[in-house]
Structures are given as structure tokens and as C-alpha cells.
Length: 97
Image 1 (cartoon, rainbow, N blue to C red):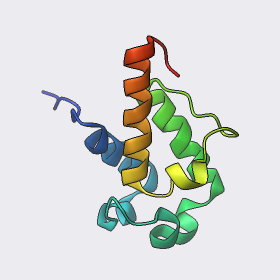
Image 2: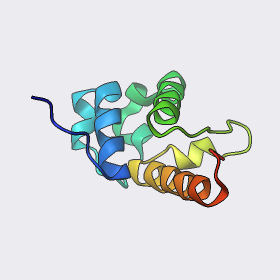
Image 3: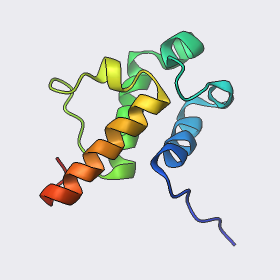
Image 4: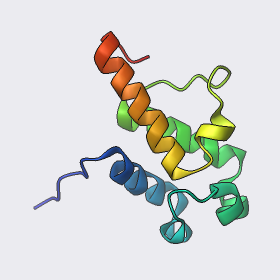
């Protein structure tokens, strides 16, 4: 029997990021800067992998030029806010932007 996926955006993000970033991520608080906490474990390539995973998980698109990814993908809390905003926009506008 499988467990249903977590329902909230922050919970889904934590599961997604834990799978990508490994055990060191488990000790990182949602409002802590991932680059500081994880050091080389959250380098530019890892950030891109996380962005791609977030896009796939939530069915959103991140504009690498227009969105301030250094800001929005610095902490789990900011990622959750970014994703929630995008999902709310999609619900209102009827699209994925």
C-alpha cells in the first residue's frame, strides 16, 4: 500500500527537495538560506535541477530571466510562496503562468 503524496505546497516541496538534496536538507529550516546551509550541496547546477523538479511537480514554468531565481529559490519558504503564487495565478487566469 502506498502513502498519498503530501497535500500542501510546503510539504510537497520538502519531499521533493529532500529527494534531490539528501539527508543534509532534513536539518534545514524553511526560512534558512540553502546556499549557506548546504554550501556546495546547493550549487548552480543543483539549483537548476531543483527548478526543473519544481516545474515538473507543480506544472508551472519558471522564467530564468524574468523571475528572480536567486531570491525565490534561496529558501524553502520562498519557493513555497513562489509556487503558491503561480498556482493561484493559473487558477485565476486558466493557464500555467
